Image 1 (cartoon, helix red, strand yellow):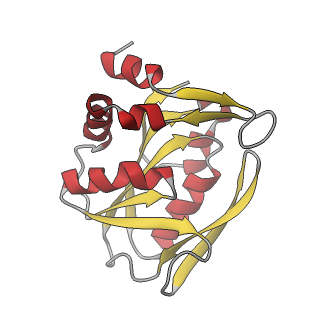
Image 2 (spheres, rainbow, N blue to C red):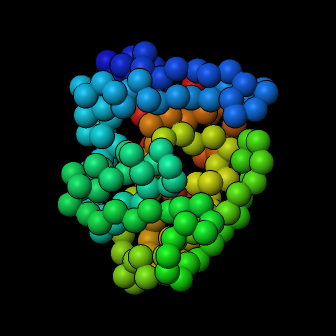
Length: 172
């Protein structure tokens, strides 16, 4: 196990039965509060890719994606829950481990052919990730990677992303 993996795992707390019974929530707030750990995570998530935009998926994905965009010299684009963006949007629906939801992105968020890295905190079943990939594609951009802090590999979310390059700092 690498030092980064050990650091990440020691700073993510499991919260049983949140947001509902049977779900074990991965709380990243202790990691975010540790400057050294947070910095190391941002450095590792900022893949050595030539990208124009970095997408962050609401809400914890924003926390990680914005500094990754800054470090990559790219723009930041939020993908938000339905009804939270003020201009015209594309929307996509998906199923979660414990429900369903709709996410949106502004129709004018990308220039044609923009190269996009999507960043999120956790890859679980892949529903949110798949919807984000589809939104970026519908908006005329190209997803060149999907980078996450933690992958819950037993839920096989990676399988829903086809040929998208998926990189997880930690897989459990």
